[in-house]
Amino acid sequence: MVPEFDQALIISDLHLTPAYPYTAERFIEFCKNEARQVQALFIIGDLFEFWVGDDAHVSSPFTQSIAKEIHAVEASGVQVFFIAGNRDFMLGEQFTALAGWQVLEDPSLVRIGSQSWLLSHGDALCTADPAYQLFRSFTRVKLFQKIFMLIPTTVRKKLGDQLRKRATIKYQMRESFDPATASIKGNVTLEACAAITQRFHCAQLIHGHTHRPGVNVESAGGHAWTRWVLSDWDLDHPEMLPRANALLIQKQGITSVDLIAASSLR
Image 1 (cartoon, helix red, strand yellow):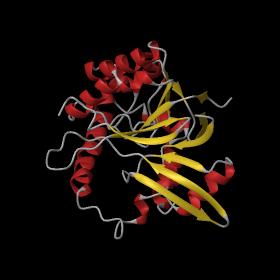
Image 2: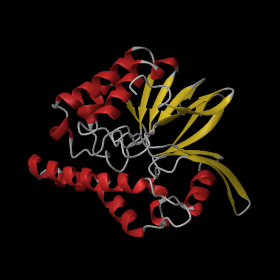
Image 3: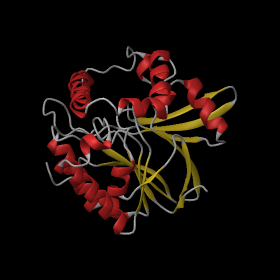
């Protein structure tokens, strides 16, 4: 059954970690304020900077605090949904029980404001990078995940920390990002977006992952659609402009909400 709401907020790519305290504080503030003003909240991937198994994370005070805030949003009467990203696809039943959210498949079709919207994290649409797509398909296999969980927790955490260090370099490169020269491998492809919107008979696609926020009106083979891209959240690198946004969908339409301007933190 397709979820249906009069209004909802959609966010992605928060990359929460104790190493980025301002971003985490903004999310907590968001849960106490903006998130409670709608009927539903959709978190469409990469809530955490990395996740190497529930056993490695759920007992930490940081994770507990994030789960507590999400559960409080649910308890306030707002339904919270989660679509896994490329960083947190290992989020499991333990965290789901703590957060109280509902897990959706990627992609998922939802109805908000009397319109249909197709939600995806976005990494599956980056089909110009076949090596990554092979890696993605392999790591989503349950058998692989079970084998991965046999690796000692300390080793898995070290792997995750390496991901975080690589991400810091990526953040530093963000300020010099030029769409004209950027590698297509890091972005979704027209062909993938055309295929997914046609398959679901939906001309409105929302995703994150690429950290290239904006609105794109696209077409291919006589088929047209509009693609909204969410920004990542980053308030912890003072050498760069902070950014965080959400998409607010109501019967009146869709609006990008600047969560930096709305924040009382800075």
